[in-house]
Amino acid sequence: MQANSSTPYSSRYRGYVLLILTGVYTFNFIDRQILVILQESIKGELGLSDTQLGLLTGLAFALFYVTLGIPIARFADKSNRRNIIGASLAIWSLMTALSGLAQNYIQLLLARIGVGVGEAGGSPPAHSIISDYFPPERRATALSIYSTGIYFGILIGYLGGGWLDEHLGWRMALVALGVPGVIYALILLFTVKEPVKGISDTHQAEEAKSFWEVLAVLRSKKTFVYLALACGIHTFANYGVGNFFAPFLIRVHGLSIVEVGVGMGLASGIGGMIGTFMGGYLGDRLGQKDIRWYLWIAVVAEILGFGPSAIAFFAANTTIVFAAYFLTSLLTAIYLGPCIAVTHNLIDAHKRSVASAILFLVLNIIGLGLGPLGIGAISDALSPEYGAESLRYAFCATFITGVIAMYLFYRSSQHYPEEVNVKI
Image 1: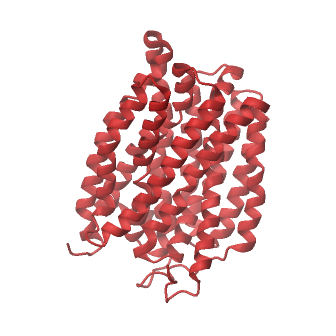
Image 2: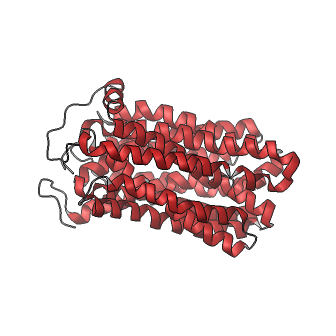
Image 3: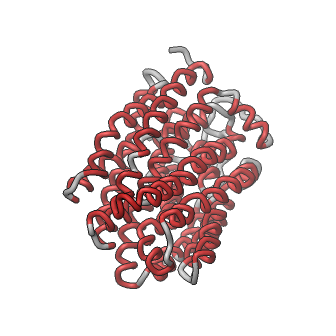
């Protein structure tokens, strides 16, 4: 990959920045998803219901994460994005460590809200920096590489969290996985340069606008409206199933916390990394022939994901369950990089942090906020009849959301060429 002739940054340095930011996103998901692998131990000690767990791992976090993400992103579009990311990483890492000191549900809920507050300043500014370091034709690939941090974080969180929970308890797991993020924040602050906004674009970017002006621009783009809704409904299944799959494996298949950590870490972590990279790579490659492929690949992945999901939910053999979960994780991860790239291609450089924050607001309120809460509530409602297997049938709600998401991704693709002024 050669450096863009219009930028002063070498290919090697751009790669380094992408690596460091991917590391930040890895810490983001270690700290966000660590409760998923620990929640059966937490449930047992604190006496919680599945609905309370869904609130703890979903809506309580998501509300603060996305609502604070808007003003922080707005500030990032006018100031130093690197410093915002570094400060945010230090805050959410400290709050993760403090979660291990919680003595009751309310204290743990407040600590998780603190993690959400910190993480609000992570992704939107990082998306904006990456879009300045990489030109439009390489943007989806770069953003997909960054997004593999989700699955590196899941891999480390599940493997490390499961082992630490087994040997030291859930409290020490939170402390041990939270503290290193503070050190990493210093590495980011001292080695990453803040790029000039819009330096990799061929057109002159306008000055940063208010949130409402950016929202008005995005609302006028049917591509974005359909895309944002599709992402949200798609991730309802991702988070709804993902946040309860560990309890499902423990309750229904009788696995230990270490077995679940290893199995889910490898299946979800590696599968998700492959799928995330594939999404960006295929989007940039196929998009050269027809830019609608940036969104069509999400449609194809949605269709292909139904079979493996059903097998993961209903197979009796755990080896088959993990193999199916690997394929499901791969296919459901494909959408993200291309969708962020499409959003950034619809808007000027000085609006991209806010644009990402708006996309993530919709994505996380529907997906992260309502997914775990919805699946948890359905599981509690089905529990009197199905007992330990209630989660298995609660997961089936995601087949409906998958069909809706597939339709919305396709509708978004129909408007994209016109709204970025590309002839097809």
